[in-house]
Structures are given as C-alpha cells and as structure tokens.
Image 1 (cartoon, rainbow, N blue to C red):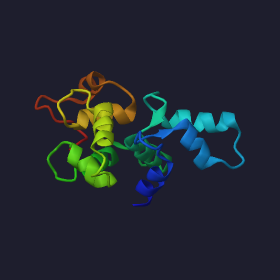
Image 2 (cartoon, rainbow, N blue to C red):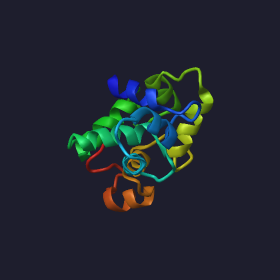
Image 3 (cartoon, rainbow, N blue to C red):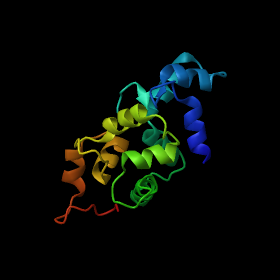
Length: 152
C-alpha cells in the first residue's frame, strides 16, 4: 500500500530502515534541523538511530488515533501473512517485496526477534512497537494460557 511505498522511499540503501540522514533528505522543506531531529526521535521508538517498518506503521496508526490494542493485533495479523501466529522471515520478505535481499530481511528479523527463535511472536512485536522489553509485555498482559488478552 501507500505506507509501504512511502517507507521504502525513505529507506537508507542497505539497512532496511530509515536513518536520520535519509529522513532529513526526504522531509526537507521548511523544518529546522532541530524539528527534523525531534520528529525522527519520536518515530525512533527503540532509540536505535533507525526507524524500522513496524515503528513507522505504529507512528502512522498513533497519529490517526488508531494505536489501540485491537489495531495492534490487526497489524500483527496483517504482518503474519500466512496466519501461523508469528511473523516469519518469509512473511517480511513477501510483505516488503524483499525476496531478493535475504541479508536485509535477516537484519530486520534480528532487530525484533528478542527470543532468537527465528520468528516474531506477538509479545516481541508489541515490545518492539511500544519500545519496552518482552518481559514487561509478559508481566503486563500474559494470561495463564500464554495468549494475550488483547492480541491474536
């Protein structure tokens, strides 16, 4: 969709993320350097110096007043294109049109796959989007069966 195209238009060459430099080039206009850095900082949830696709989506949802638990669950389900209950490398490759760039997809997965099990579970997705740890997500939302009250 349009958000994907917008994101990919701002992505730095081989990082799969938006850097401050690429963001600055894309935004340009009448904004001061300080204003650009403030906007970038607000989007860079994990303070990595890069804006990741999930953060970009979350910021757009939040700006529309749509960053709610049901919307987060819906976003996760859209990223989980095969309905497996987790976001896989193949899901990201297909969704972002990066089938020919395995190294880039690997880096993107590594950023979010906090458990290191090769997939992104809903807890890891929430932790990444919200900029908190998987443990904090588990403490706040986990039920006895391991599913999340407001997620898939």
